[in-house]
Length: 85
Picture 1 (cartoon, rainbow, N blue to C red):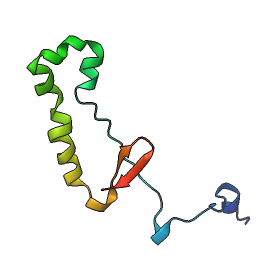
Picture 2 (tube, rainbow, N blue to C red):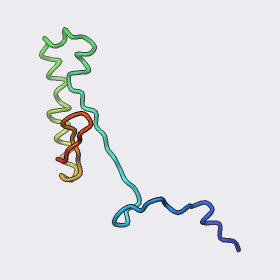
Picture 3 (cartoon, rainbow, N blue to C red):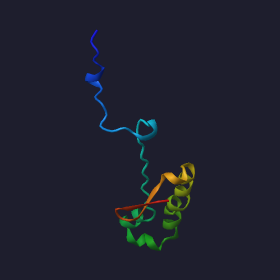
Picture 4 (cartoon, one colour):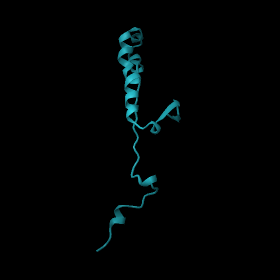
């Protein structure tokens, strides 16, 4: 019998640390009121614009981050410069 396993499963180019098999990245795009204001700038004068669009940044993001390990997240403070939480 011929061993064909190596033909279909090439050796990995690198190994994940601690025996891990893969990496996972979760991304969240939190625009807040910018999406609404991009559609119609006159919405900036309406209280409902802010009450509806601030839920994600003020309530949703902290709830999602509360489910994750504290040391697992990077937050960009400046474009292209992520920093650890």
